[in-house]
Every structure is written in structure tokens, then in C-alpha cells.
Amino acid sequence: MVAESEIMEVLFSCVDEINKQLPPDEKLKKEVDTKLAAEGGHLDSLGLITLLVEMEESLKNSLDIDCSLVDELTQEHEESPFLTIGTLAKWVSERPSKVPDKA
Image (cartoon, rainbow, N blue to C red; front, side, top):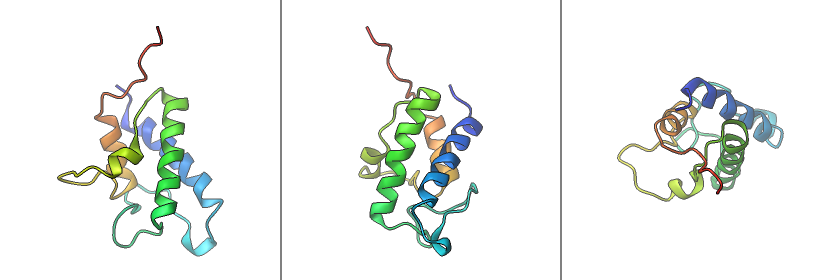
């Protein structure tokens, strides 16, 4: 299992990449409580999807974690893992999502 702090580091690097595309007043803060898919978040739906795709690729490439965040976005959750960067990192860390060994 990968530590939540390692996942957070990868997610923050994705925030850096997305921020390159955003105007100064809409840039995301690299903080655990930065809102993603919640009231008060700075991303529209396209921005959120773009960020999640970037996160999926980075998690797979950096930590060998295979998870489909975009697919999860459409699922019902008792408590959404997409509220903040911190809730997303916690959710990813609790998933058995290692890339399967290639035969």
C-alpha cells in the first residue's frame, strides 16, 4: 500500500500542471483542503476532468497505482472523494489499485 503522503505529492504535482493553464486568480492552492468538486472550487467540469485525467496518469507512472478517477466521478458515494485534494488522496490510498502484473 502506498502512503497517503506519497499520493499527495503526486496530486500536488498535477495541480502545478493544471495551474499552468489557469489565470492567476483561478489557480488551485497546493493544500490538503483545496476544494475540487465542491462549492467554492475554482474548476469547472472540464477543468475537473482534465485534472483527474492528469492525476490518473501521474499516479500510474509515478506510483504504479491504476485507478480510474473519471469513472469514479460518475459513481454515487456516501461521501464524495472529490471534495478536496486531501479527501481524494485518502480515497486513493485506501483502494487496492496497484497495476496488475503483466503476464
